[in-house]
Image (cartoon, rainbow, N blue to C red; front, side):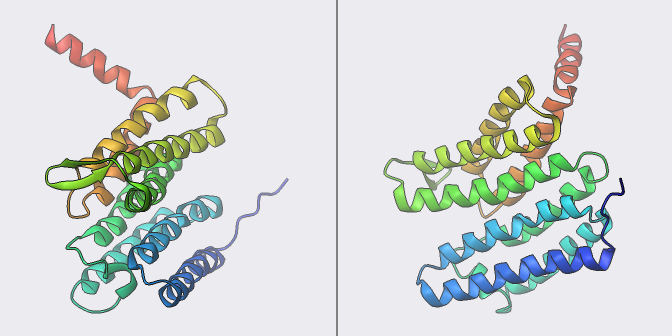
Length: 237
């Protein structure tokens, strides 16, 4: 039975259409809400979901990397020019949008050819986990704590952990079915992602969280972590 394989122009058209929808939603939200952080997080979450479309459409790695490079340059310009006012108008100094674009390109370069599931895990944890952590923490965070001068909340960190666990579990379950890995490995990934999000400053979590989560999922699920531990044990003894 032949497999549906859309041409490159159709792949790009579908992916671009999704980004246009997210952009229009952001414009509408800017008119309806006075909270720029809500707009920013909607764009943050909505844009990252394009990785699922790219995976389904089998968009080639070079196209994803090229898009990441272009968007990275646009975000750098947006810090000095009003190109992306709905994203960068949250009243804080941060390179988060730039790191967001860079991390997508790096993950595609690392994993897209053989292990696209790990690129998806990293990007979706960044988009959903980090996005919901910020929104939950700001709206329902009643138990704050400070790390390196940054204000966090246990509610936000819990949202990050649960979302990271859910994302990792769903992706691994979809690729390899139910197994002990799909139950245990997401725990380690979620704890690492939550720690990286809590300790990151100036938007660097948009780089450390997706890269750390994807690499951890890869090492744990492919068995390389146990190999590294064995090698380290032999070296120490």
